[in-house]
Amino acid sequence: MALNKAVRRIAVVGTGVIRASWSAQYLARGFDVVATDSAPNAEAKGQLQVKEYRAPALEPLHRYGF
Image 1 (cartoon, rainbow, N blue to C red):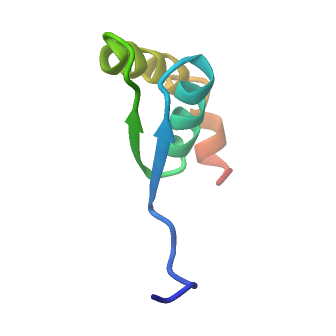
Image 2: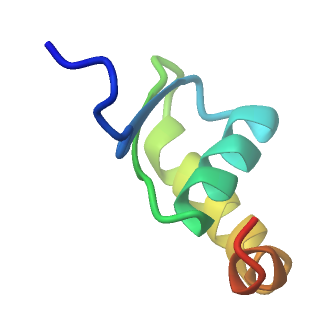
């Protein structure tokens, strides 16, 4: 396996407030994000939090290449 291969997919364990913000940051930078959490309704809650974080707060970061 080549070690110089670009990372395109990120795995996040947990979909709470902190991990959702990390997921939003990675998504804003163009990564594929796979998140997992065993809590009830974690998928729906995580998706809602990521949507809140992504728009519009992260758009300036993406625009300037951060």
